[in-house]
Image (cartoon, rainbow, N blue to C red; front, side, top):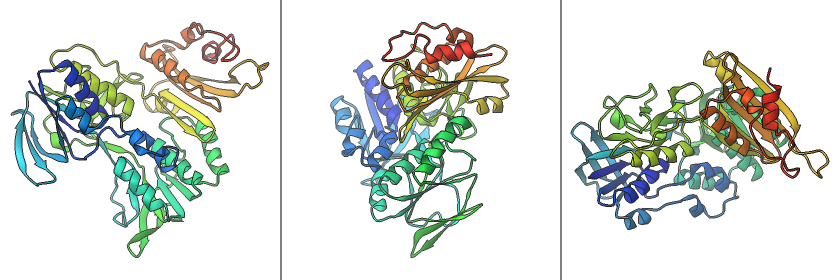
Length: 442
């Protein structure tokens, strides 16, 4: 059996490692444009901010390790064409410019995603950077050494984390976001208000509800960002607008969402026989709505890559869907969310209610008892839990993993009130705050 894998970040690495173990007699070939694999891009801000000193710790696999497993590791190789019906690939060795044809019995598409770069006047100016891979992180560090004024465009997790890293390093930072709140995909207003105040208290300039109109430069380098409402001086600009699936090779050959995300079934099979896909190139079933949705997260990628390998020969283990569970630390605050926010539930046309708990996470007789804010969103009619958000200066983010399981198992807000949680004064109260949310729902 000849297995070809295109792309080797999180999903690709997981697929290859599992396939090599499960099918020792298979001939596995991986094609990767870069000369590195498995870089944890979620660690870029930690690297840029100096928290992580050695970036090698952000790689959890290597081409050499794959080669040791007997995988034909084709680094710096670009797949130019893919004929999924004839099961053929046309490949270019980027170092020698040699082109050749490769065939396969099974194909795993793990081509990932790429940052969205809109056609804005002046975007070709120097020092307008992207933040996705290892090379980007090194460029950001290099360019920011001499820079004083940093502008980040896009207030998702990556943009927000970079803002904190730059501010902590003594830079003047402006954060531009088209929506009227930061992190609005993940959190409702009462949570983003706290995060925004934290940034304002650290002298970060928030330009919310503004879209970039053009970039202006001096001597070929960016010097100013012009938005729909103002203008901001900039030595370096980082674009963190979002990601799109890297799937142009396969258009017209497999079913996709409008944005190009490949649709897979619960066994990671595409609409074409013997062709599987995983990771940021894919749409995945989003359990709160039951729809296929594009949710590019490393956690989704490694699960999907593992399942693609396990289901390669025959359907074995189903994908359970995702809640889009994620977390972030902003200065002293630990924040996490899962599933739908109250706003996104209403955008989906769901009649949703919510309950918010503000309480000490453990008894007040303890030496410290930090406050926790928890919000749980649920469907009014069925009372099924749809999503949750948490914020506290104590790290209580694992509670969101618990609520992720509740959503996955279609539990109700009333059942949450009586789930069995332990009590010990070091950690919580006799009624855990998750129970309290369930008990307090209308």
